[in-house]
Amino acid sequence: MVDIVIVGSVALDTVKTPFGEVKEVLGGAATYSSYAASFFSKPGIVAVVGEDFPSEHLDLLKGKEIDLNGVKKEGKTFRWQGRYEYDMNEAKTLKTELNSFENFEPELPEEYKKTKYVFLANINPELQLQVLEQIEQPEIVMLDTMNLWIQTKKEQLLEVIKKVNVLLMNDSEARQLFETPSLVKAASSALKLGPKHVIIKKGEHGALLFTNNSHFNAPGYPLEVIKDPTGCGDSFAGALIGYLAKSGLDEIRKAIIYGSVVASFNAEDFSLNRLKQISNEDVYSRYKEFEKMREF
View (cartoon, one colour):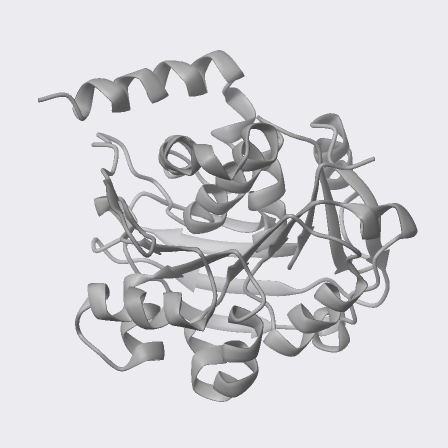
């Protein structure tokens, strides 16, 4: 039995930054988030890959005890190509090949339908609704989105937001969705739709948590080496939901810090290279550094 169901993309990425370049490496929102979640809980992925998807990537995920019973294999794998300049907060997409992901229809294995924790990564909100219809009695549903769906599927996205406990957005998405420059106003508007917790990611500057009666500001970790921020938002989300599945929603502030910890490691190398090198002890050690950063 998996602790968390994660629905999103598994991809092959080609990425160039001022500090290097990689071609056709393991990527995708479900990949990063499930790997990050595995430091705390047992995730299962619902996704699609192509017949051309390297078996060693699947072996890597299985080695972290990530359940792949929800992963279909058909056609050709989704590919993304992007570039970062010295401002590493935003990628410039150079090429997207949806391939088998274009007609992806999430079908949950029977054992996934009883899962209490669900992370809906930044896929089409219509597909996110399909997933929720298949989950029997979820306790925590966390939703992520992206600018594309705000532009093209806003009404459907708002319908999904009404059905989740935790809404996750970056700062530009929050401003765009709620048409305000104020993140406080954006969070207030989001809370009125139904979520109990709204988290706004601010990249290297940390994250903000809003509820109806509280506010929490999590710092970013001061990294000396940043090679590739691809997947940092997904790593943050995965570690967050992974820790919540382990400790419960009352521990959401700690979960956000653990999300920031794992995301900071991810930025230190391309693809999953850095996350593959760290242990739970490394994660906890950097968590304690965050605690010291917040003392005053």
